Image: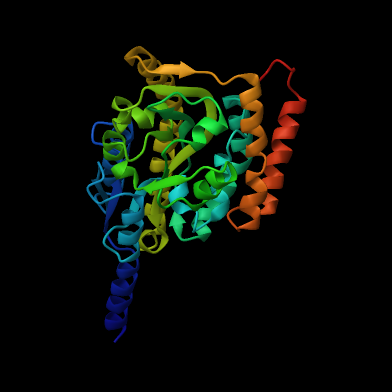
Amino acid sequence: MIRIITIMLILMLSGQAQAMRFKIATLSPDGSVWMEKMREGAEELARKTDNRVKIKYYPGGVMGDDKAVLRKIRIGQLHGGAVVSGSLSRFYPDNQIYSLPLMFRSFNEIDYVRKHLDRRIVQGLEKGGFVTFGIAEGGFAYVMSTVPIRTVEEMRRQKVWIPDNDTMILETVKAFDITPFLLSIADVRAGLQTGLINTVATPPIGAVALQWHTQIKYLMYEPFLYIYGVLAVDSKAFAKISTHDQQIFREIMGRVFRELDRLNRQDNVKALEALRKQGIKFIKPSAQALEKWCHDAEAVPKRLIQTGKLSQRMVNTLESLLKDYRSKQPDSDE
């Protein structure tokens, strides 16, 4: 009898900590830095868990855009995705705090704020049902277009793309009185080719990796908003592996994302220069035009709070951090 109970306990305990093959999808193409580093992390994870935990990636959008990936996670077809922050806003709206337009003047400000808020965002996403492993910088997004854009008025006349699953960006463009064209990220290049859209906002590395840069001619040289990405794994799937293996998973992929965070900033500098060398014209808005951009941007936080896309508490925290940082800097540090 004791032996039977012992065997049953062993079976029960082994069932609580299964070997697991995580299926993870992303729009990042094979050969990109993201895929290179994530594959290295997957190999190390399998090795250090004696193949108890493996990852199979589906790169290049073969499983669809972020919206499709999240739907497949919900039905169990996938276990996770490497996605942009906006895709997860319904699970934790405040994760979009960095994407307020024209909020940051420099990477120094970004770095200071992130030291205080990254952990809160990771914890918020975990409460929303996703285990993440830190934040990897996408970088500052710039307005890129087929026609020159310097002013808000010129922007309003364009066919401006926004992601079809990012409600915060939708509210943002409404604050600028811009009529958006909603498309999945996977359809943007075709939209630019056919003229369905003619304006996008994206970091340089995104424009190059997704080949959008082949269709644009102008870049408004003013950081418009800040974008980041995460590797989000369904919490229920993550709970199927042992606590020990969870810790190994977190340590390895946390290190991978810290490395991606560092490399992406360097790669954005290179990509920006590549865009310039390709012949894309960099346009700097005048002081008067920029004042109008910033004036309209000031209405965005209130609008997002009123529509439930951001909390007043998170906005207050961001504004307090920026005020604190700027009070310690010389006037020339912008």
